[in-house]
Amino acid sequence: MGNPVVSIIISVFGQLEHTRRCLDQLSETLAGKVDYEVIVIDDASPDGTVEFLKGLGEPYRIILNKENRGFARNNNLGAREARGEYLCLLNNDVFVRGDWLLPMLKVFREREKVGLVGNVQRLSDSLRYDHMGVVFSPSGLPRHYGQGFLHRPFQGETRRWSAVTAACCVMEAALFEQAGGFDEIFLNGCEDIDLCLRLASQGYSNYVVHDSVVDHVKCASEGRKTHNLRNTEYFLDRWGESIRRDQALSDKPLYKRMLLFGLLTRPWTIFS
Image (cartoon, rainbow, N blue to C red; front, side):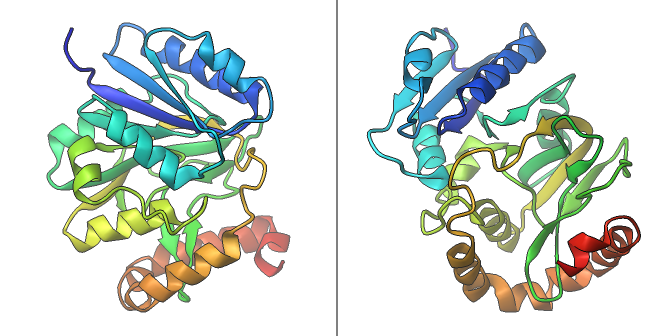
């Protein structure tokens, strides 16, 4: 039996019901469509997640951490164990639906020097969207374009963005290794944006497939935002000057459009 086309890597910490649903949705949407494996890294979950994972067979491969290591380290570990040509990084609170993966893989056949390929993410159990790509503010901070939108622009497009979220994304396994994976200085935040910018500095482009749509609970894991301030400081020290000089300028029209939408529909999110 040969290697799978895609290795799906999922880092989990608690939230067993989310993990069950996430894995069920993978089976429903991918059965018979693509050869894949699922590498699940349990990050010392305090609930019944370990017992559940131990009961899984093919195509699941399970790694059990004795202590909590965080998103970057877990995904780097999963990538080292992966056998697929492509890596799909997936949060356990992301629930896939429809034809979500194959259009993302198609980008690598149709375009050159592809970095990360992301998709549109809608807030689970909501009519509002959360992510259609990442744009940068004039100060250099990343923002999810489309956050709070009730409509979905760019349908039918595969569009280039400054960065994409790793809550659900695909990239070539060889490129992830070549880039050194996620920088483990970041703890559960900014590691995906940092990787996108590192790849962009080497001439790669990051894309979103706007007809691939998934649902995301978002920040379901306990302690998800604990290190936000620290991560932001590291990120801006490294990238702030170059972002303000480059990406923030090119992203300015989309950023202004996003602010205007927020001002008209959800002003408390702008001024809070």
